[in-house]
Amino acid sequence: MISEDRDSFDSWVIETYRELHSTLFDLDRRFIMRYMLSGEMLCYLIVKPWYERVMNLEDIRSEVPQDCLYDVRDYLGYRCMDNQAGLVRWFVPSEESFFGEEYSEIGAIIVSLLVKYGFTERIRFLKEKRPDFNEDMFKRELARLFDSPEGLEDCIYHLMDYIDRLNESGEEIPEELRVLTRHLETTY
Image 1 (cartoon, helix red, strand yellow):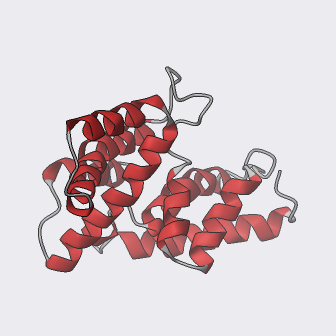
Image 2: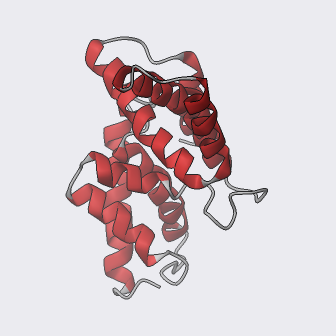
């Protein structure tokens, strides 16, 4: 439960949502691709449902996990890769729900992107760093990906690095990654 008073919390939610929204979308209401899987995008995805409920005059403080609020504020206060990666945990299955439980549509999109692009990037990275990388190592990495959330967590960093590299080189973001932005644009 959030301990701060309702007015302060609601004001913070509204202000944060508006700031993030103006950062992530252009004047034509299209998502700005350089923010793909950025901390700003992840914060927006977390704060948006809060904003909608606050705008409906609901008191949501008892429903917002304190550590989720902390992660959002931590990232917004210090925008670094570690804080950014910490936000992803709010979209992927938890240790308890990793096997078979439902999670959000946006979480499913992010997990599929992590598996397809993050895992591929992780393998590229491992091959680059370890010239002796072999089929057995690949099988261990693949098993680790599906055995626990830690495998997905490794892919988070690699997918973020991949997107950063594309943005820095001016290359186009793959069309499949745009599924996430289309989802954002339709829920604008």
